[in-house]
Length: 470
Ligand code: GAP
Image (cartoon, rainbow, N blue to C red; front, side, top):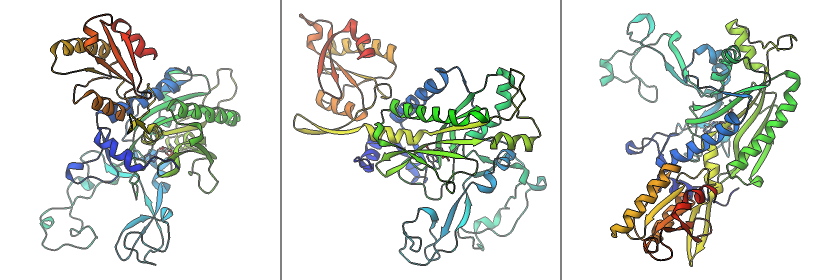
């Protein structure tokens, strides 16, 4: 387990504008989180790094962006309608609904403390169901029974009595996608027809996924709305083992690029009983989070399960025809599946550092420079000296043009500014002082380094290059 405390990360994330509880102003909505200016910047940096590493830098990868709402047949064919469930138990005393496989003591309700109040677990489907279009049964609104309260008891003389209850046409049912993967499989044939790539090749997608988790918990670790970055890598069935091994290495390279120490990543070979219904081999890559060693991302061999299902249900061929004239076949799939929120939580955990500067304790984010939401902060030493401010504005404009994620910071004294920037992980603070304006040091600035707190004098002309390569 990491030494970092979860509450320190949660508190920093909220205080400094990374992550806020969803719908906070109205008391929140469990399992949802909103990203503030720095959170969204960090998230995008992780997404861009992933896209560069797995799509742009390779010749065998194609990006796609499929719709979140898909035909319900997708989720029937994939097995999600029948089997995408978690075991749910309800306490007969306090009516808390809990995930049976996550209870510390299966006989004791952790909410009210009573023993023996759980019945048999029921399979709770985690997909969010919705209805597409203004379609409801028979084309008209029908009354289907009396209104009920949250516990399912009929309510007499309530306001709800005045309204009809609509019952929807089952054909209009759809789901918010619980994984981005299906949007990739359903586009396999489209991409093959457009590009006719050599095998093996991969399709990559980033986007939202939704799961109605029974017990969302541990900050953004288990959310009801989250983001996935997934690859379906199509291979000849004889090649899956060799390709799987390559992906294990690539996953470690990815963790390294996120700045996660190698000894905090652990491979868990998932046993037959615990693997998802579609997988013949899965490795969970676990990370030492503040909440313990938990799944960061997964690597699965999905065989031809998905393309085979689509071929059977849609009656459309999913076969790949090799260019050398050998027989056509349905490709098999290796699936590295990355959760963005878990990557972000791991990055924050690995980066969170405490030390002592001038006998005072400081906490800061030792983020890799390529992930830092703010690359450089620019300050005039004193904000009431117009000549300093004017010069600092010039420097700020030049850096902003070059790097984009540059912050103007003239709030409080210089020590406070350094601490604030350290806390959000800004690698460099540039300060324009009186020495910038005159004497031997004219047209030079101070660059202060986050990790060492060392300060270097750099010519303004050389600043862009210095920041780019430091
Ligand atoms: N397409 C395969 C798939 O979805 P998964 O193991 O269910 O596999 C993949 O999910 C990754 O998505 C996980 O390793 C995790 O990083 C992320 N993930 C899954 N459920 C999540 C949740 N409720 N909140 C945040 N991230 C989640």
